[in-house]
Amino acid sequence: MPASDPTSTAITVSQLNRRVKTLLEQGIARLWIEGEISNLSRPGSGHIYLTLKDDNAQVSAAWFRQRQRGPAIGFKNGDRVLAYGRVSIYETRGNYQLIIEEMEPAGEGVLKRRFDALKLKLANEGLFDEERKQSLPGLPRGIGVITSPSGAAIRDIVSVLKRRFPAIPVSIYPAAVQGDAAPGELISALQTAVERNECDVLIIGRGGGSLEDLWAFNDERLARAIADCPLPIISAVGHEVDFTIADFVADVRAPTPSGAAEIVVPEQQEWLRRIATLASRVARVGQRALDDRAQELDWLARRLLASSPAATLRRQNDGLRELRGRLTAAISQQLLQHKNNLQQTNAALMQQSPALSVQRSISRLAGLQQRLASSTDTTLANSRHKIALLGRALNAVSPLATLDRGYAIVRSAEGGEILTDAHDAQPGQDIRARLSQGELVATVKEVLVDD
Image 1 (cartoon, rainbow, N blue to C red):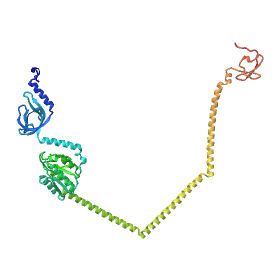
Image 2: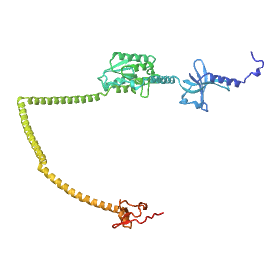
Image 3: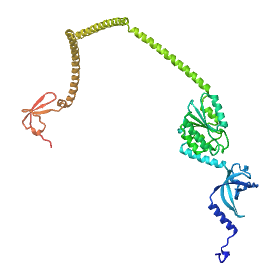
Image 4: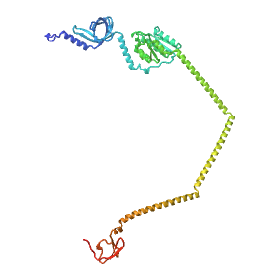
């Protein structure tokens, strides 16, 4: 039910349009829209305004200058395009519109994205890795070509193969190279080539064209069939600037069909030169083998001649003479050795002779006597010197030296004891006083004792 007071809940048109704009921009994510351009306008501001339409509806769109990239100037009314952007509303007029961020021609852009997605997928699976690619045969026994039998590609390939190496057989496996049925026919032709086993290398391809024309060679099923093929495959699709999924997954990519024919076989003249070189080498090897066999025959003949009885007797006679000479030399060597041993024995006996021993003893005795005399003189001199030193030292502490300074040694006349204390003598006792020169005999008259 409407509110009792409309003025309390009413909003302005601007507020309504702003709410609708918020709902559109938040509720619908950015998206791709395919349609046909109409009402294209390019004002002086650089922005582009247009209408996108299909058979049943249309929508206004704006492509602002700062968002424009690439050849935007090339679009015109009637072009079918893919536009990427967000849905919004022009608040001033209340018209909803598409704000374009990117725009590209329809068809090619979709195919390009599909191509990039499949390329990334197969690359992540390892189908493009160099490790899984097969090497081409140096000289194939047969060449298979999978292409349209009426196209220019087969004529170019056959022409080049005939010029370079006409001796190699070529098998053609016809298949459509354009259109929806082309991938299936290419896969079937590939399977036929493997089953027939008529060749050991395959060329698959076609002439140049647009991305749509070459699209059959971007088919995932065909790419996997090429990857699983036991035969090495050369991909030759379009011109040098054209790349397809088949080029990446094949064992070798050729820039053109003619280039594939150049790659798959060598130049015939080159092989003829190689064969001539090999023939020359075989001849040289054969001649060398013959020379070796001839030399071996000569050696065997010499061995046979050397094994005859006459040769045996000559060798034995020569051996006897050699042994005789060796025996004579050995006897002479033994005699010389014995002579040297005898001389050494005589010399040793002479060294052990009694006369020589006595003579050596006499010489040793004379030497010892001379050493004894010399040692005795030296010992006596040393002893005299020591005695003199000891005499001087003894004289320094001798009592006689003290007597020379006026002292006397007093002894009892009876026992001869040395008297050092006056108490030891008695009045009337006879004593003897030893002076420096001679002795005195006296009688003690009185004993005086110092305090």
